[in-house]
Length: 219
Image 1 (spheres, rainbow, N blue to C red):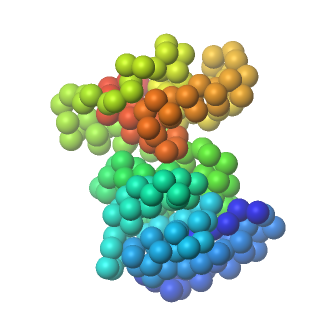
Image 2 (cartoon, rainbow, N blue to C red; image 1 turned 45 degrees about the vertical axis):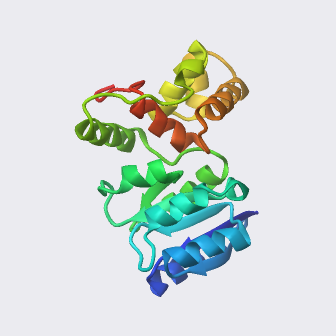
C-alpha cells in the first residue's frame, strides 16, 4: 500500500486528490496539510511514501518545506512531488535542488497523477525527457559553467554513464536496453552513484548531473 500525503492551501484541491487516490486499491491518503509548516509536520508524523506538495503556500512555501523534509535523515523515504500550475514554473529547478523527486501540473489527468505517484513510490524520478531538456536549458541559462560536485570524481565510467542516461529522462529498463545489461545492474550502478553523490533519490542525480556538466543542453 502506497501511503500518500497532500499539501495544498486549497481544500477543494486536496479533497479532489484525496478522493481520486483513495479510490485506488494500492493507495491510501494518510494526512493533509494546508501550508508548508503543516506539510513538514505531516511528513514527520506520518512518514508517507509520497507527499504531493503545492509549490506556493502560505506560512512556508513548498520549496522550503521540501528542503526541510529532505534535510531530516529519518524522512529519507518521504518522496516529494511538487504540484505546480505551469509545467515550466520558474521554481521547478529550485524545488528539485531542494530535494523533490519530480513534479506534476495541477491540471494533469487522473491517470497521469496516479501513475506519477506509483513511479515516485517505486524510486524513480518523475521527469520526462522533454521536461528534463527544458530544465537543463534553464540551468544553462543561469550559469555559464559547471560547478564542482562532490563525489563526481569517484564515479566509475559505468556509473557516470548511468547517471548521464538517468539525467536524460530514461528509466532503468530503457537504460538497461541501451547498455545491454540487466535492470538490476542499472539499479545497482544508480544506487552506488547516489551514495557517492549524496543524492537522496534519482531526481537528485539529475540535478547533480547537469550541475557537474555531465549533461549539456541539446543532448
